[in-house]
Image (tube, rainbow, N blue to C red; front, side, top):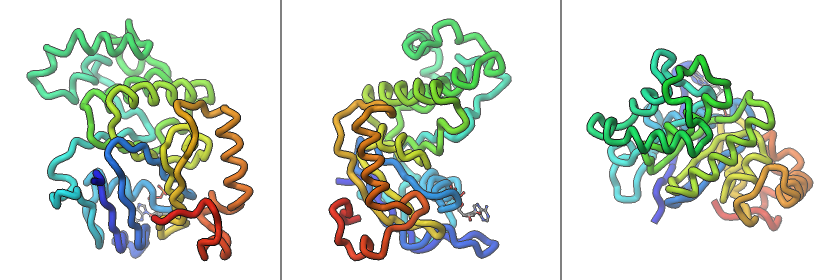
Length: 263
Ligand code: ADP
């Protein structure tokens, strides 16, 4: 049974901008799905709708149980910026997302978690005393300690240099393996999507819809610089040269290609 069913007929902003049209897909429990599409396609709009930050749309986002999506599951969001509270210590930033009774009980566990992600002596430091990469580590940990059913990630490693982004991807893989929440990761980095995800949904240009539902059939865990990732990256773009612009060739639209799968 799927964890999440999306069926958005239309999402139009008050200024008339139609960001999403006829967007339908399902996500399975524990699945890691990447959403790849051109800038302005409507990816952030979709995450905001799923997170319940914006509820104005024509369509539905539901649990298969029939409950509305926002009523029940635990959803964590990781944005492009770490969004830590600058006046709170690292420890306090993490405690903030835990229910009050758990805060004191989990203090020792949080210390261990911090140590396990290379931040052993950072609990008492403030975000301003950390590097950008360290701040993202804390943000990543914060997203996981609530043990979410669904983790929404919006370009979380953008604007980091390559070594830092790589370390964070490896940490994400480690944390995900521990509890296996369902993840929806928005990125426009195809290699990142191929490295991290079980499945990639390629979005069209605005208004966004799914143009290709692609299962990543590679052994995991895998690194972004692995030859297998590079090979699949190259073959996908050879088959669909305008994929990252949100376009499939007319021939592909007729379904006469090996990669195309039912959405
Ligand atoms: P993406 O995340 O794929 O880059 P967005 O979801 O941010 O795209 O935006 C999709 C489209 O919706 C863009 O044309 C953008 O200008 C428009 N848009 C986003 N937010 C608003 C808003 N609050 N009001 C009006 N238009 C918006």
